[in-house]
Amino acid sequence: ALSSTDEMIASITVPALSNRLRMLRTLVKEACTILKCSETCTEDLVLAVDEACQNVIRHAYGQKGQSDSGQKPAGEMVLTIVHRTGSIVFQLRDFGPTVDPETIKPRDLDDLRPGGLGCHFIHTIMEDVAFLDIGEEKGNILQMIKTIE
Image 1: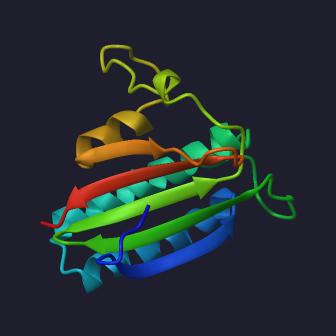
Image 2: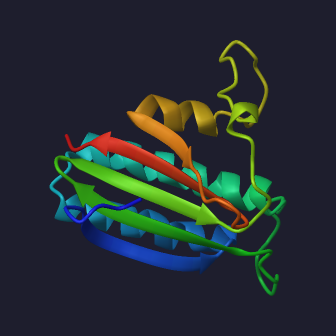
Image 3: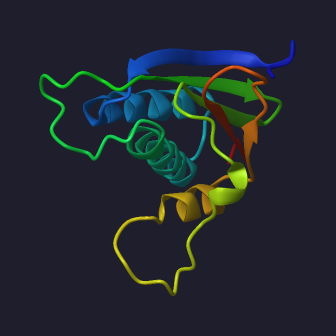
C-alpha cells in the first residue's frame, strides 16, 4: 500500500498488449528523469519494468506475443510509479488469475534455452520484489523497489 509520504509520479492503465510496451518504457524513462536517476539506473529500470509487463501479457493473460493489430486485449494492466524517500517504487497490477509467488522463480542461468530470464533481470535489478496481498480481488500486484542511483 502507498503511504502518505509517497509522491505519486504517474499511474497509467493500458490494455495488456505488447504494442503498449514502448509507451510504458517511455513513461518509466521520464519518471527516472524526474527523479534524477543515473543513465545506467534508468536503463536497468526500463528493462525490469518492461520484462514485468511482458510477463503479465504472456502469463497473466496468456497472450503469446502475436501481432496486436486489431487484437482484443485479454485484460488491462495498471503501472503506478511512486517516489518513496530515496527509492522509486513500481506497482504493476493485472486482473488475471492470482498467481502463487512460490511458482515464479528466476530460472537457473545454466539452464540454456530461450526466454524465461525476465524474472532473473527483475530480481537482479530491483532490491525488493514482492507480490502484494490484494485479498479477495482478482489479479496480482507486483511491487518492485529500487534505490535511486
